[in-house]
Image 1 (cartoon, rainbow, N blue to C red):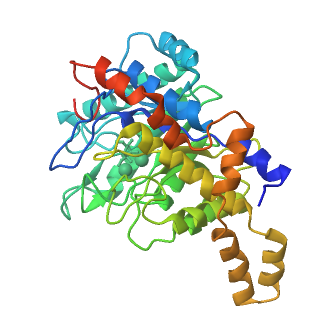
Image 2 (tube, helix red, strand yellow):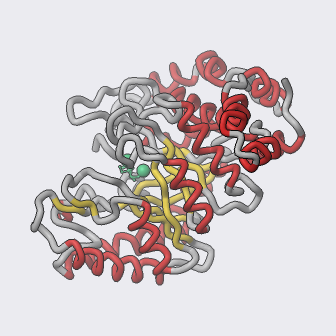
Length: 388
Ligand code: PSV
Ligand code: MN
Ligand code: MN
């Protein structure tokens, strides 16, 4: 099979942002295994991310996490990234590793701590100004563990006020994306537990506030593609954090646990116009590779997204609509499944070859000698981020 020109064009536009933290050592609460050649600095993380883009053509930008990726001069860091062929993307704030935030950050009852958390977001916006980044991503770790521990409604009111102050500080081309998560680090309530809460807050803020959907942040059996369809319909799907899960927030390679779910999600993105030129939807990975090598792990992830995108674009939309409208239950399902079961890997290898990319990026990475080089060069020092 070969792709139509329209399908080729959509694939050529596809861009999946990589998280800087995917290149560092991360783990579970049981053990953090280290990998030879682990980056010690954000510059080394960018160099690794650039390898993923060089071999796949799919990952032109890298998300930062502040303060994990702290440097003195972000303009210089942006120039450094550009020299490597990538750019700096979304800036992620962090209010989950400071003792002050034990009982909350943007929702805290103590005005001093809430001020500190808001100021941290102002500092993130300063970083965005220097890097030219568009998106500030807020994942709020705030929540409570016991019924009665906090005033659920009061926390929402304080959150709304904090978000308003942050939103007011954004430049006119910048956006705020608010990520939700059902549980963890707190287990009774989270202050932004679901898409509805995120949607309520972002619509109160204004047009440049959007929802971030992390595929690992839902209850088991949640129909995530329904949420995708609804947020696109409402014009508030700002970004994805892609990963996959078997049980909780596992942060595994996207499409590894359930490729069909990834297909269903991207099918709704296609249906809602999320892959069209000028779409507001940003695609990112949010993954931690705790036993597998990081660079091939990221390569696998972006290829999985590309593969399911190509399959979703193969859905015969006209035939599907006709079958749906005719009430042809099994016919409509068969059209949908035909696209899912189409093996697009040979056509994607041709697509890469046509663009001067390796047919098999994973094999090309293994043959490149890069892993051996960084293992020999990066000796000593400690990594920034999770392990720090
Ligand atoms: C929280 O689980 C999360 O998904 C947020 O996106 C964070 O930014 C990311 O993990 C890394 O800590
Ligand atoms: Mn996330
Ligand atoms: Mn997560």
